[in-house]
Length: 84
Image (tube, rainbow, N blue to C red):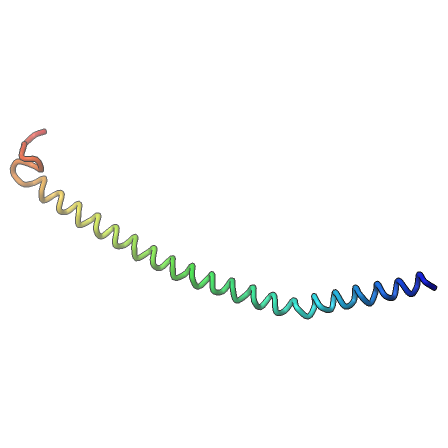
């Protein structure tokens, strides 16, 4: 009889443990989902910022190249010497 009583107590304790996990699982999953969505939103914003920075860099490089071509076409070149 002791074996059956111990088995029943262990079954009840395991049942309560699994019930607690079962009841907490939706809350944990919803919290995890919220964090993933926030991370996703942050990544989308960062991707947009990176794209804008890349466009600015390309624009500055293009304007710098145009300025360098103007300087190279002046008589005397960049440093005042021709033909180096």
